Length: 239
Image (cartoon, rainbow, N blue to C red; front, side, top):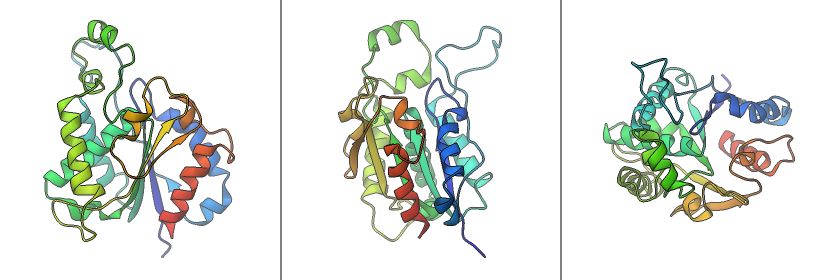
């Protein structure tokens, strides 16, 4: 039976799963990649935004931890048929991925993470974003997602320490509380939303790709450097 490598895309704040359409469209025309049995997993999406809708008084904007638990269930159910996975996160989506992995380790489910062959982070604010911080704090009060995008957020910092200790630098053999997963982390060359220092943080395999905060994740052809880079990582994971 052919082993398929599933690719899970996780979008950022004020975005949706549709942001990945340019990426998946190029993938669909990449016959060499498809020949390696690499395919996107059905879309993962979560509620996000700056303000709660006044038309829906009984709804809330979920915290990153809540979204991480949703991703955890998604990996078990929608992505359950794939014995190999690569997770790709843009902006806040990278924080969601990291929180999900850490929460699973806390539950003693490190063995389940062994099927994740790599995590790719694109313009993720690993140490926060200072862009319009003062205005954000005044205008977007009570938004749990915005709070965790601020510099020096304690929960984000605690998650980052766990990722480094129990995932990036973990022993090769998975345990209940640790699982080594390689991370490939990229900052946007012209990104004014997330600085290079925040995007790269303490990750050992960190680099820079052309584009601003948004264009870094929107390839228009196989020649787009983000696509060619992620493609290389997918081909390696598919071996």
